[in-house]
Length: 211
Image (cartoon, rainbow, N blue to C red; front, top):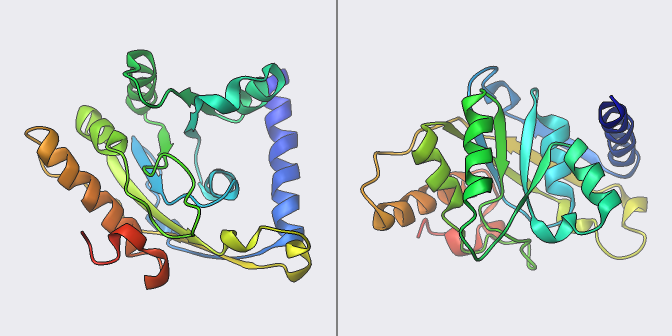
């Protein structure tokens, strides 16, 4: 009960913060499946992208987040109430994989940022294979999201300019049947190319020519 109240209050506070400090241009929300498991995959430049996905998705969404954010008890409680769970990078974490599978089996949406960390130059960086692996293990659809403009939310006084943030939801898609790691690498490139298509050329970085 307390966590739900915290979520409602914090979501209102975050929504108000973005409303007062930024302007949004959203397209493609009609592409979001209303039911069934779906993996939301987005680029990641700042702290803002997870918040934006949470606020613009029309359904309950769970978020994979780096373990380091969960080390402080209060922050961990707050993030857990927000639907996030820790991912331990650099090592096999079967418990987290099972949790992600369980969420998708329950028909929920699962948000993954395939790059694994924030891009420092606002362009896509080489991604990890986690989203492709989870899609193959569960058969869930993938929903690409391209977000840009958040890189302007840096430094001092940026909020006075109320930068425009563009949020583009693409069409859900399936991955072809995979036969192993080599195919998974190709599938990750496919996922990132779908995200890149939703971004202006200057943001496509490592996937600017659909590598």
